[in-house]
Amino acid sequence: MGNCFINHGFTFFMLGVWMAINIFLFVWFYFFYDLGDQFFYTRHLLGSALAWARAPAAVLNFNCLLILLPVCRNLLSLIRGSFVCCSRTMRKQLDKNLSFHKLVAYMIALMTAVHVIAHLLNVEWYNNSRLGVYDKLSTALSNLEDTDNTTYLNPIRKIDVHPQQIPTFLVFTTIAGLTGVIITLALILIITSSMEVIRRSYFEVFWYTHHLFIIFFAGLVFHGAGRIVRSQQTTDPPHNFTFCKDRSDDWGRIPQCPVPQFAGGFPQTWMWVIGPMILYICERLLRFIRYLQTVRYRKIVMRPSKVLELQLEKNGFKMEVGQYVFLNCPAISQLEWHPFTMTSAPEEDFFSVHIRSAGDWTNKLIEIMQQLPEGTPGPKMGVDGPFGTASEDVFDYEVSMLVGAGIGVTPFASILKSIWYKFKDSDPKLRTKKIYFYWLCRETHAFEWFADLLQVLEKEMEERGMGDFLTYKLYLTGWDQSHATHVMVNFDKDTDVVTGLKQKTNYGRPNWDKEFTQIRNENPTSVVGTFLCGPVVLGKVLAEKCNKYSLNFPGKTIFYFNKENF
Image (cartoon, rainbow, N blue to C red; front, side, top):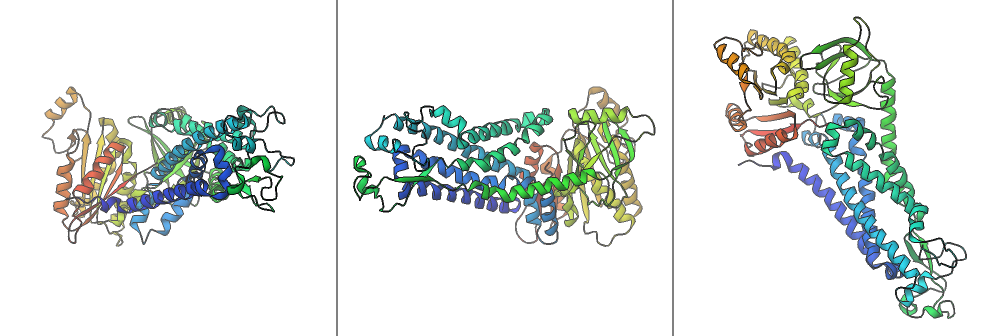
């Protein structure tokens, strides 16, 4: 029986800790405001909505502290490098940074909704108290004179003193109200533009809208400065609410009941977010410095299936297998950066990326490159990176299972090239003993630009008597009747009609149960690293199979699942 804790145990633990902190903060601050004596009079005006507004605010502070950290990719690469020799499990968690970023965003959205609804109720109840709709005490608290403009309780002031302070005026002119509206609108735009359908089809809309986080955090820092939630202050003599709450007519007239004094709490949100904001500013400065560094073109090649290969050079650039870079082309956009996995090997003196036509930015880049006159250098290119990914750990396993879908083969191109160089140089540090490689494509042309590398590897392994080191299987998932007929006619040839390789192309999709069973039988006591660069749906299938076919006791095969995330 498979054991999901092999692949997800530490993830469950980390999520449990995160959720426990969220629950603790919510409960702690809920009861702090719901039971605290200093908020007795405030609760009398607002009821439980006070606690329902403040508890989510505490959770928001914690999650706004976290939300920027998973996208500080240079920081994550630094941390990932520090764990390279000691903790595979921790590195796997760092590879899930974007999933955690989304999870924190969902929590921020939920807590914002609760916080906003509670404060809308608070504004309504403040206004009703000012109008005398409720009891005598509520009216007295709302009518407190305030010569210094600091000791009032109800922010919606007395009509005869401040006739303009209706609820709408409070929401759109006070610091707390105006920043709250700005923050909420920014958050709604950020979240809605992050939906999968928008991000996949209109990446530029997602990219630009996502940068409203700058406005979001600016508003967040100043939001608490309005000090809209007020608590009772200590006076001399003290105002005992237990004795004085039913004697509002005597406030200030008898020594036992001086006029109660109120003040807003010290703003705390900025203390939660200032650290991550500084880290993120440093992150962006580093990206800008890298943008200014010169990038030279070594070769520009148009591959089949509208795939552009760029071979680039940059001073001091060092990479590992499976890593990725962000590219910026000012001729298209000064601001947009897009991630691409490198297809070159660390042993080469250049780095390369393969870019598939998949949106406005990539289409424009390919169009620019196709229109370049012969011998003309390409447009200015900014490069940020390299950054570590799950595929970087492929050589940490004795057995590796690589699964690529379409252009998702790119990290494995880097890996297989590096293997070729390691064999060529007889690298004694190569720990990997066996590699299974699966590539799924919709059309035959997609195989063409990668088949030559597989042919070289195939020949190299045979010459060294290591034909069993690399087992690769190519799957064509889409074909027509004419293609099927052509394959049948040439079926008896030694090489595949599609790729020219000795390994024949398979048609349809892999039977993963059969593949995992075969790998487990061939490697009965091994730890197998399963790596995917492809769609989420395929990732769910492979993760399930890794759990199903792992036997979590000594001397049995264990599959560790790793997925590329951008």
